[in-house]
Image (cartoon, rainbow, N blue to C red; front, side, top):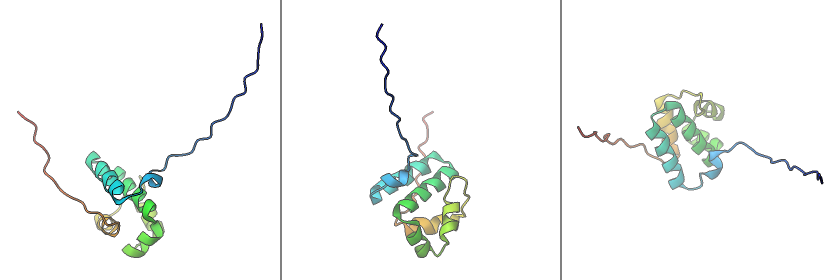
Length: 107
């Protein structure tokens, strides 16, 4: 029986970073809208943080008057930003939040 050694190649992986894929304002708005629809405050804050990193956290800190480190902390999955902070960040990113009525189920 012929036994040949097979060379195994290692696959290098890295953590997927959504900020690397948010390239247009439309991408960012759709991403934030999807997070908002989930109804999870930490997911929304993290999505807002991803968008902020895609746009540039230092520039965002200057535009909002908030500290860069404070923004990183507030806009993380474990962050708990004040609503005023969310509004300042959303505005500085050139985005808007919209409210629409929930569709009523038949019956």
